[in-house]
Length: 209
Length: 213
Image (cartoon, rainbow over all chains, first blue to last red; front, top):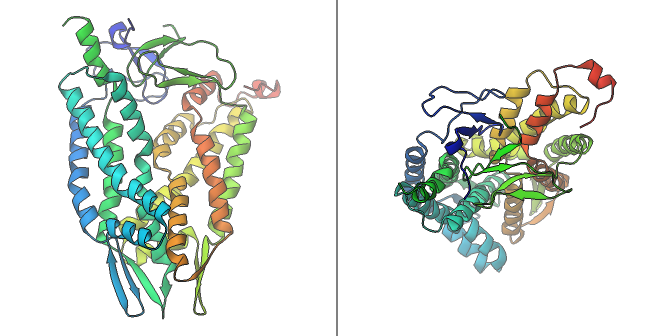
């Protein structure tokens, strides 16, 4: 049976990794090596994570409904949302890029929000359902989150390149800002989540409490 | 306090450090997270990589990324130019997000990395080691140069239909830079902490003895 650090009265520093002794009722402990605050668990992890996730989920709608880009080309003007941009790429024959943008800009953020919600919910309920799988899910969303910034960078490049007086210009839309915020907020939400809380349920179940 | 103990940051399980063969990684017994590895490479290699990163960063920003030509009109842009343009065309939040994740933060990561690694290579610890290490840890998740490359690819393809578009030196430099940054971010900061803790600030006797970690 694996021992947890908390059971031994030890806490690893989240900043530098140094393992220190920590009293259960200590409130203001700091890592001796690097000065970062020492905790057994990230304080208010679930509350902060939920709050950031809720904000991200709320912004997900304007991010997808509002245009991210306005293009004016000769006499043709168009507005593009993320989805219409994906479709446009597909219709132009770049089905591979269309798929990449679809996955990065629509699937990944939605997946991140859903997975984080599942992780938070199961952790809050103290369930020890499928812990190794949940651990892998957590690692996965931590790694892919930032790829959703893809469309933001595409917009920034197009806006600055297509400024041709006769032929057209591209302007950014509010949807892009909302989308960038969704990415940032979901990244912050998963950073606030302390995955050790998930495993604490297993420790509790095993000690029969 | 047993300093050979290591605690899994994802599930709190306690393990004892063991010597690893070259390039091996140790994973947590309980949850599979990576605990530590023996992939660091010499400080020389790390320093060389960081310096390369600096040169690539300068090139990536000094030269245009792509050039576009349509009906005799030519336009090209560097990254900074693109960010400034986005901010002046009214989308300041977008410009800040792109400017930070693609210019400012990667730059800080490289420069602070040099600030930390150079003295360590010569056997002593820099004066502001602790804040510098905290900064490196915080900067990491927010540098998104690889995503930018994919974004540039998408932008090029989108424009290829309507204009003559050509990738430029800046873009290639960014490509190489993203490889360097990826390699540097695989570096376990905890190991640098351990290294730095063992060294004194400005210990000239150590440097003279040619200590290399």
